Image (cartoon, rainbow, N blue to C red; front, side, top):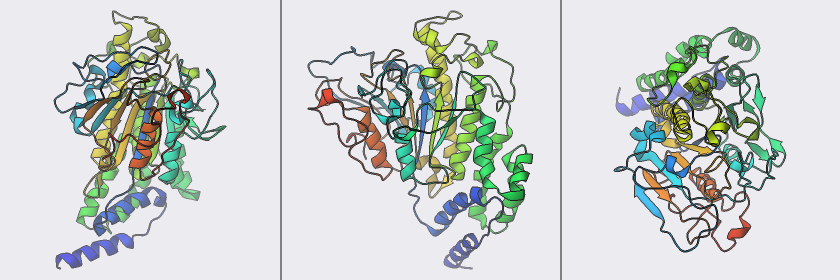
Length: 466
């Protein structure tokens, strides 16, 4: 058989595969395999927002040696240059060490303000909406950027919100995502609820009962996968195997000892079932597994994972890292077991960034078109507390991993001039940059800052658009 005939045969096989009980789960995967067999480019984009509470200081994301510190909490006078450094020759700060292998697709952003938000311990729904919220209010004030992206990048679930709250008993909270004014969207806090809600949707009738009776997704899908594999040619069969390997982590219900050199882990709890654990690190670990599987299967293209986000959960305690004081105490300068408040914050941040790095590796292992799923994914790490425990949102540090299929310029550290200085830009401009990268161009988002009326607050950040 010549090459052209073999290609046609491959396409025919994919087009005529019929799906059974697992159709919702396998259809997006087979669609990507079909596009690869047809030689069509992958255009879909994915966005992940990882939000940690209690502030992200600018120096925690600035390359070593830049000397970056907090700027004065007031409008700045004079001029300061726009900083643009390639990361290739820069050393990442301790909290971001896990991202060292990905520096070529990493963008570190300092200097963007969002004074329209209230600040304090948390800007709640204002964080992702770039809108004014009364201090301490938990009202949804408008569409958030994660929902705006999900609405424009349709999938079975336009948006999936996962997270952890101080109280392990809470199954669902409403803390940071909204589809409009007064329209809060849920964050699922119990991993077992998230698992059932997402993957229980793949089946109906007796198949759904079968799924509920199984302890893991692979058990349910085994027969279906074997049947589909028989119809696939070699290249697509190998790629399907790569996708399915990603679900093996859902077998692992035990907490993992994270490879973090800067923890007090010797005081941490004994490993347990992380899907039902009261330990916050276990639950967050499980949510990253579930979120990765939801992205890989195509159940969603937009995922938000929040860690103690919102005023109600600023007292999150990371006992799983051996730190037995809460983040509010740390924010007020409390030390523990010989570690300063800043060192404790870095340990907790190192854990979160390690989870992000693990997600990047999973998406890198998934074939998509001529590359991997990570090629078409952007992961954003930020805080709902902007730059400090008691923030006033003068600047909002951001870590961005991925270039959205070449639509974003990456491998850089950029630092915009301070609030009130020539060239200053806002967080809303970055959100518009994400919309442009997703193929959803928009030159306004959220609310403009009335104190920056003479500044350019529209459109994307030209320095980040490829």
